[in-house]
Length: 220
Image (cartoon, rainbow, N blue to C red; front, side):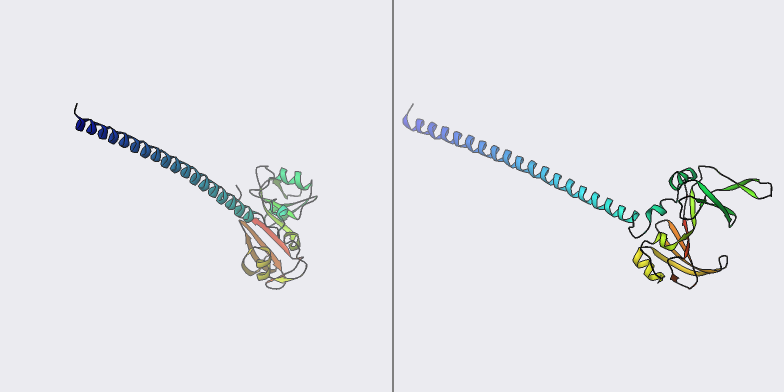
């Protein structure tokens, strides 16, 4: 084998070695790039999940804020929707009843007023011919009557107008009208699905001892 051919083979082997080394470096770089991409993807995923969790927490907090109002007596409002036996367990035994607008209201030992129940019918009459209420425990408290305004609006100590009530206690003012049945003005507010109707002597003026109706829009 002549000298020139040997030199050619040496250069050819060197070229092959260099090509192989370059390919290996490229493969290693690709692997490292893939590794970085995977790590970045995992980091991004964790970040997105964290952001989603924070958003969910924030949404939950907002929802809780809507349901709870520290300016209102939530213990009183929570009575709406309870059954007769639940009210009795919470407020004590029934001590009095009254008939109003064709239905019976019940006063309990520790209740804020008279409690009326949805679907309450009259099936029998007593010896004087008066209807006897037909009590079914599936019926739920649909309204509360003769509650003082100060029992609902916590901290209310003096007369204020309907617009200040709305701003201070976080309820929506709806309207004021003359109530022929009660012979007084009635100022109506809303809180979530609860209607608050307050009887007043002066139009649009709410006093701590003004009487109110609490009614829930829908009882299921």
